[in-house]
Each structure stands twice: as C-alpha cells, then as structure tokens.
Amino acid sequence: MLCMVGVPVSHTGWTFITSHARVLAAIADNPNVRIRDIAVRCRLTERAVARIISDLEQDGYLSHTREGRTNTYRIEPDKVLRHPAEAGLPVASLLSLLVQDESERVSKPVAQ
Image 1 (tube, one colour):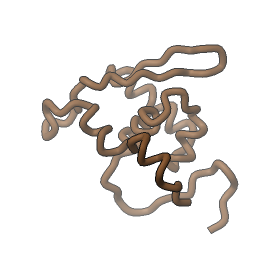
Image 2 (cartoon, rainbow, N blue to C red):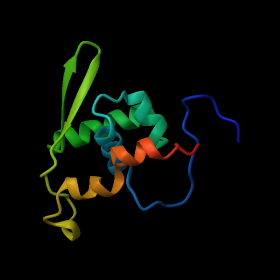
Image 3 (tube, one colour):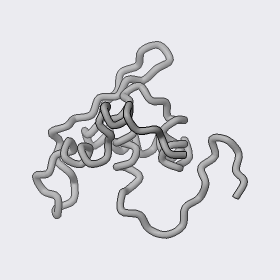
C-alpha cells in the first residue's frame, strides 16, 4: 500500500494497547517529542494526538511547559490508571512495559 510520508497507514482490527497508552509511551520515550512525530509513531493523525494529549492533561496524567517552539512534557508516574480493573496500578507500571530501556535502544537496531 502506497502512502504519503507522515500520513498514518490505516489499521483494521483490534489491538491490545489503546491510542492513549501509545501516545503516553511515545512521550515517556522522549519528553520533547513533537506531535507530528507521535502521530507517525502511533499511526494517528496529528489532530487525534493533540486531542489525546489534551485528555491526558485534563485528567492529570500529563503536563507540559513551553520552551520557545518546543513543548516539554511531564508524566505523573504515580497517577493511577482509570479503569476499575487496574485500580491502584500506577502509570509508571504501564509505561515500564511499553517504553524501551535506553540500553535496549542502543544495542538493538530499530525494525522498519
């Protein structure tokens, strides 16, 4: 399937991880990441990413500071997940499963 650079390729079917979790993991991996780069990584539109970031900020999982033209995001690692089935489980536990350890990123080439 041909696609333009930066335009997410559509995905059909279900997945285990929500878009909110993917966006949060992308931010955890790089607190200075651009919305455009999150969109490409998560296969979402930039508008969807902006909406998700707004959701996460509104509920206190995330905050940001503006430094020139760059946003620096801060995740609240002790904030607990919203669903009753994960009651008491902090965001940090989820992110530990989704974000690569720095040593793994250096030693493994990125699959494309």
